[in-house]
Length: 377
Length: 98
Image 1: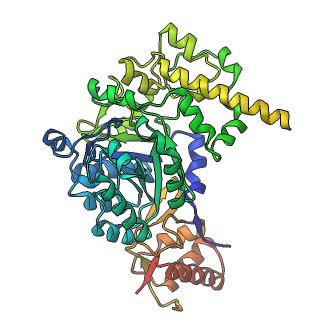
Image 2: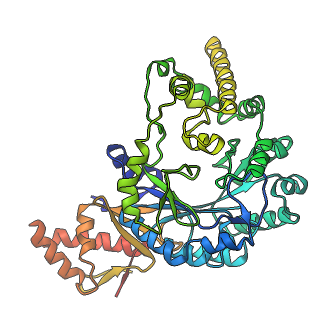
Image 3: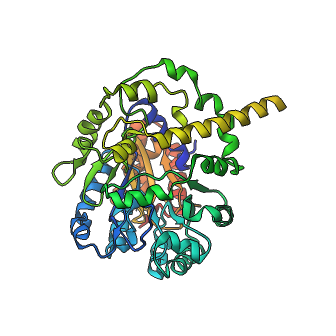
């Protein structure tokens, strides 16, 4: 009988156990809110020299304590994100302390600060993956989005260092007004460098600090529902999957099922997020009053075991939400969620017209493609 | 390297072994432990029993004796299993021999 077995992360035994009961699998650490880029669409970035933000950042010792507590609860996987995590002088210390706890470590970075030292670190102590965002494949477009001259060359240099170093890189792209004309080229670029994985994200949500001027910038970068649909239709890999799942995504039965719970997603079932200043939240978008737990004043165990169930049990009394969103047959296609609702309106349960329009446009496109498919069959 | 029952093996400093919900998961810390960087390892119940006895003091022979008593099995059979697992762990740099 074979005593030692190799397991792939996707076959991890905990996945099955998570179906049986809620248990901790992963957590995200936003180790800084600062970034060296100044992207208009970003929900978090503060200037790299922001002293106040820097002073509030969790220290490596605090991160070590949070990681210890999370590992004791069974966490297996941690994502280091930001802001730009490589802005921190102690990035290597943080990365290694997480690795040494037996955690699988992923890193989100814009790659512009990647240096030879990082490549040596990642080669010796491999991350699960490094995820890099593409903002454009030309200098003009990239820097229009990043808002920083010289950032395109720095991105290309960093990406090349990662690829030449044999580091496992995944690329993703934000689909924005500023780079819409270049999206096909960005997709080709992304798929060329990461054959197994590339994705667009068109979901822009408002800022964690509720900065009104910056929220207007974000709004100006959003694509129209028709543009989003055109983008999805042009995705030969993902659109057929959406059409295939048409009957699950669009379900008239939803309109007969009422429920006043706010949270219907999986948040808080297997993971959590920690902000740069130690705030425990069920996901990175959730900043509403009553949904934030300060880890500088408490423990991960208390947050996970007592606070999360309370948040998940939050309810709505707003008739507009209960009658419109909760009974919507295309709710599975909607970008709406309580966290985004709060960021947009200050309420966890307000319908948002833009998301509604996007969902209906996506639904129409999917149903049309499904009808054509059935006709052909 | 061929292991003998007189040798002692200990978990390598290049891995982290974690017991998660009764599963023993071995997480490589450095490159070169598995065939790919995102590979993990798990041990079955017998493997777990062996792993728990790798205290840096016991030889493989004394571990075999202990397991033989615990599982009420023939020493020869246990020794074969033990050397097989120990060899595989050593080959993958999950343990080191002293």
